[in-house]
Length: 198
Image 1 (cartoon, rainbow, N blue to C red):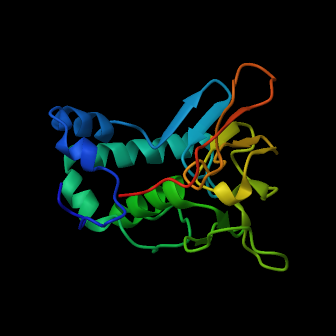
Image 2: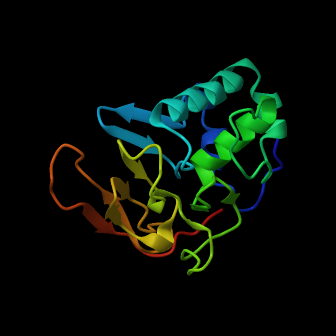
Image 3: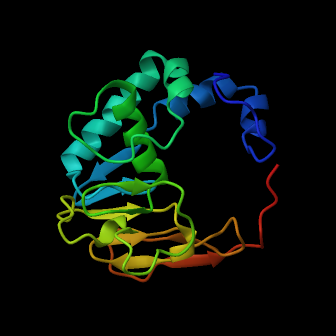
C-alpha cells in the first residue's frame, strides 16, 4: 500500500513479486490479530493486564475493520510508541495504534498497563515496575490459556496459563509447536542457524 518505505531488512520481496500477490495481500489483510478457540487465545505478542479476552477480540476486530475500510490510512498512522498506556476512552487512530502495538509488539508493562515498546531481550530485574505482561497477578485474561510469540529471549514458556512459542528460529534457535489438545511436551526442531534476511 506504499505507506511505509522499504528497508533492506524487509522480507516480503517474494510475496510482492508473486503472480498472485494481490490475492496474497488481500488474504493477509483479512487475518485477525487475535484468535480464540475454546479456552485458548492466540496472539502474536501479548495483552495488557486490563484487557479481557472479549475486549482483546473486539479490539482485533476494530483493527481488521479499519484495514478493510482504508488500509492506506491505517498504515499511514499506525507507527509510533504513543499512546503507551491503555485507557478505555482511547479513540480513533490512538486506540487502533495501541491495540496494534500491544498485539504485535508487547513484551513488558506495568500493572496499570503502561507499556515499554522499546524493551528487547531479558525482562528487567526488580525493582523495575516493568514485568512480562503475563506475570501480572490481576491480569483480566487469566481465565484463558494464551499462546504467544514475539519474545525469543524468553525461549519456551509454559506457565501461569500461557504458552510462549518463540524459541528463536530466526536467530539459530528452534522452531517450536505445541498440541493444544494434548498434555505432551512441545516439539522443538533446531533451525539451521542464523537466517540471512534480505
